[in-house]
Length: 104
Ligand code: FES
Image 1 (cartoon, protein in one colour):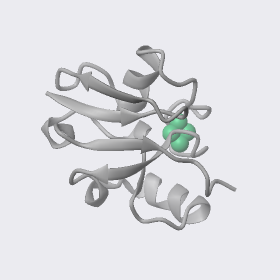
Image 2 (cartoon, rainbow, N blue to C red):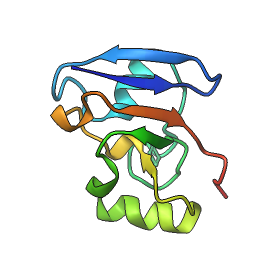
Image 3 (cartoon, rainbow, N blue to C red):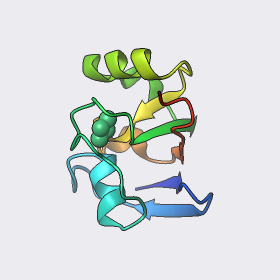
Image 4 (cartoon, protein in one colour):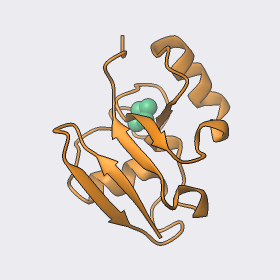
């Protein structure tokens, strides 16, 4: 399975993954050396790991903690916190783009 990640420098990466190989997409992206984000260590507090979901059915899966963080920090409903996205089949084929521009 794979998904596409467009990083903070607008470079596109095709990332192959095994289901649950990492605790979250955020940990996977950091392990791949693509970003140095995740200030709250995946607690859905900081918003530094936010992405825009360009394609894929991931928006409806938001956790309660994520909704609270995104409501207070973001206006765009298409955003997710990568620390709250699991490496599951739902991620297969998705396109995620680094996007913290609305972060306050
Ligand atoms: S690591 Fe802080 S919100 Fe995801």
